[in-house]
Image (cartoon, rainbow, N blue to C red; front, side, top):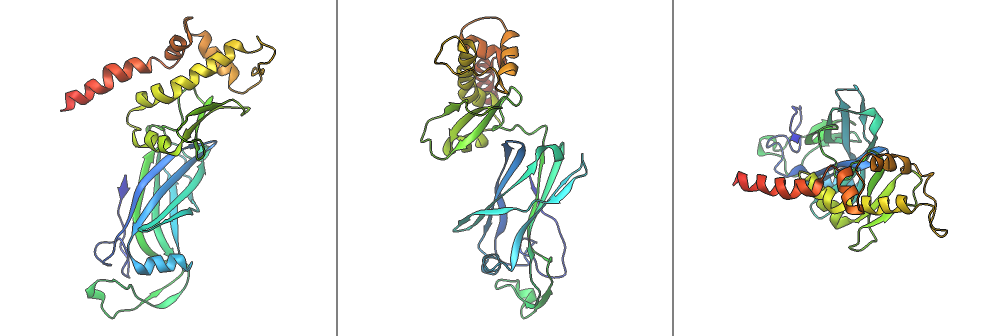
Length: 285
């Protein structure tokens, strides 16, 4: 959720009608990436002054993270990853161990240089002819505060079974979802960009995502464990970090075929998505 806030002695883009331009945060995404949270958001703006200042490095995007549970606060040091016709995309990462519970990220643009005669090209008529003394660190544009809960917000890129599985964006895999057992610690599920975005867009339906992506990957993993060491040409996975954890969960459920065991290990996601999700939607109409 984005909250707007702030009051300043000079006109600020995104603060009321100080400047007759658009400046807004859109498409915020937060997910697990290895041992970090990866945070990505997009800035939409048509303001020529702020775009020129960002391009000339006389202003920069600033994102201050604060966590009420751990009292940790830091400048995230966001990176500009893409330039769009109507703005920019940024991303940053933060160690998962540093935050928990409620987290707030205050997003704005700050000046990097002194300008004693600053004017917005599209500043409000109330400020016509006025110039402002802008110092380094002064806020020029407000994006608002992005808030999320680390524990409560479902992360579609971090599937069940603890740290045994990890979903990774695959930029070169076409339309195929593939499972990779080469990592010493985790089973990697590579998904194309379009599917990764779909997981994020549909994060309110975790059972649908678990059934369509995690369940097949778990079935392949179970098969690897069952066949481990039985054939000469098969690789021995018993020393992998995920092996014992998955095997213990396998041993804790009744025997059956691959599909049956995988469903039981995930607490029957197929049943939940078929009998609950769609029925709930129908009840809302």
